[in-house]
Length: 520
Image 1 (tube, rainbow, N blue to C red):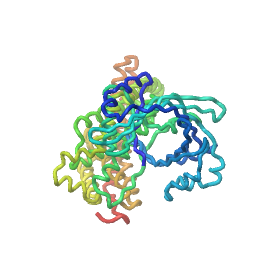
Image 2 (cartoon, rainbow, N blue to C red):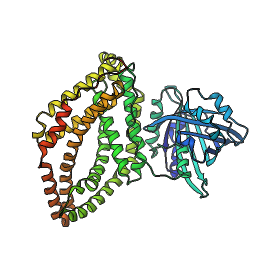
Image 3 (cartoon, rainbow, N blue to C red):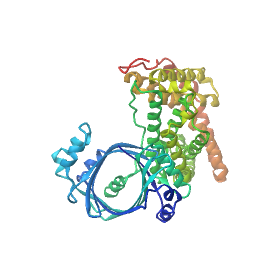
């Protein structure tokens, strides 16, 4: 399994990297400079890409080598992928040689054995890269390969010539602890502006060959095992949340995609909820906690204006529709501004440092340095008792906060909404440990309650945004006042009855019980 960290830098900053003291202090000898020409092959309908695989043939100083990468994940800039490679006589891949080294249980092996795939492989895009390689040895003895790649990706698969520049760093762990990758990256970031790289060259090449819009990334289901320890499950959950966060960073950085902002914010909220869930056993350092709060604020402002412009104002009807159009146009303008600010946050060194610091904390299991003996024991026990206790605790808290829900004032109702959100995240995190049907029914009732509380919260947020909009644009004062009154009336009309039914249904729903994975 290849483990590497990808970072992007502006071409003009490459000299600063080359002169960085860290490289001079830890490099084992002079850097090696290579001229590389890569040919990526796939079928005309990109079957390898569709199966999350990439096959290339690389020429380096007259020598040809093929490499197949498949599977794995990207979390906070850390790329983990299966990799198989070997020498070939020329620019054509040798599938028989690959077949002999790929593990039998790897899905990509069966795919490459299909005649329809083997016979249809053709060049899709190429890269021409100047690669500078430093072999680093840290004071702790970890061995890391630091690579600076500068060049271009080119494609003309559909008859249209396209190209995109490449300027990036790859830190690959050769021996030692993965946490050392982040130590090196943070040291480089101190002097060189860097951004986390989410897409590999293969992914960028495929996007060049077959242009497609960036798609928002939703949370992927978790597959837990009852034999896993509490600490192992925390790492899986945190990694899953970070995959959702990092998977949407390119869409947020593009500056306009509403769904990418929403999903990145959801991933961050899930992460913060998971950190709170395990807080009695492992505590995130205050500095990182503060940075996650800053990031949540940057995404939250954009999301709030998106909801106002795209959803809440659409509820105005009748004579208010003309007012809604003017307000929506102004709200959309504010949303675009907040998207630009969110993009600036995501592409900043501050964001890079936050994600690197968080991943370093996870990879090093740094919480163990301050854990008591009792906490260490609890981290090492199987997950099921902890999961069951967490779901029960979340349910008790929600039932307590939601007592007399239809009569609660907005601040108290907001606390119920937060408790419902945390309860849902928890049951979704642990879902694979329980009976699937029971989980589905429980989440359905919890979601219905969340939906009912959510639109009320949207209206309360909208009230503050409309006030701010009227202050920024006094010519909209009358329209904003009317809209606030209209929405407030909706909030009051039938509020008790609308909340009572989903609350009763949730309160009557039993917690999911264990399926075939074992008993808590």
